[in-house]
Image (cartoon, rainbow, N blue to C red; front, side, top):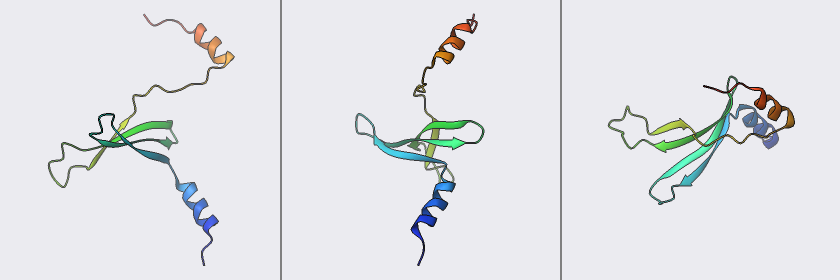
Length: 90
């Protein structure tokens, strides 16, 4: 008999992200949103669409994109002060 807690923790250690299935507002397309965690970039929000341009078996079934959704950042007094000290981009 296997230990479910051990199996769960092994999978938890290997997890790199999560996805949720969504349907477009006009209900014409299913897609997925979620995130992946990388050692270099940290958490990256992604969106996945089926490949409507699939021409052959060698073409991918899905395409993964970095989400263009703005990142929600918690504003702290120190980050606010640091932001006001930055020089404007000309």
